[in-house]
Image (cartoon, rainbow, N blue to C red; front, side, top):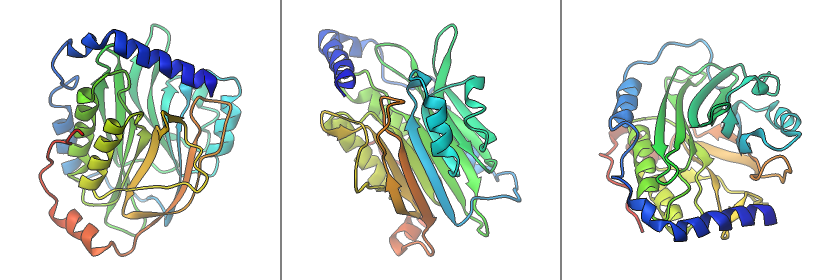
Length: 298
């Protein structure tokens, strides 16, 4: 914990010393039209599938810290074996994930930070093949490095609805919230077009009240409910959890955030079941929808 706190205190110290960097350029995504491209893609009829997600979904959400801690492979293998969906942040896109994810041959990687020898990003892995997928990317305002979001659509067994899954690694190194707000707005714009169940999860980096308020506003706009944990061991900074699992059209029946030594974030495990039928308020949201307004800052 001390190591983690020191790391983030260092980050915040840099924020104070170099706060002027937040004005380097206009707040905009890497591609102005990336959210609209995803929207247009998901508006098209998805490819048909004979296999969909079953009546229950076991989900793992975990920031893997680039696999920098020895033994992470064994831990990931153990945690993921009985999971239908894996949402991993700071995943390394190389063959090192092949063996730990042997039970999840369908993998969608959205690239984020890249060095000459290593490509990291967010990874969504599943037992069943997604119908389609798209990526969003936002820039860290000071470092100039991308933070990725992977969005995938899945068929549901015995249903004409689909599940949309967004796996995000939130912008972190910024003094204000403008870049963070824009990142959420792009994801909300895509998810707001969907008329079925949603899972929106990842490492949101909600380490202050303004960031958390933006996420709560996004959740309210999309009719998402946060999964809660009886023994909440999610990694925190300044008293606030950094990772979240938000759902619509699903109910959490079991959840856990076990402590681990194999990352600077603890994994989040949840078992979900479909809401059948949807509540009237949710059904109205899914039928009619509304134009997406900007996610308001605090």
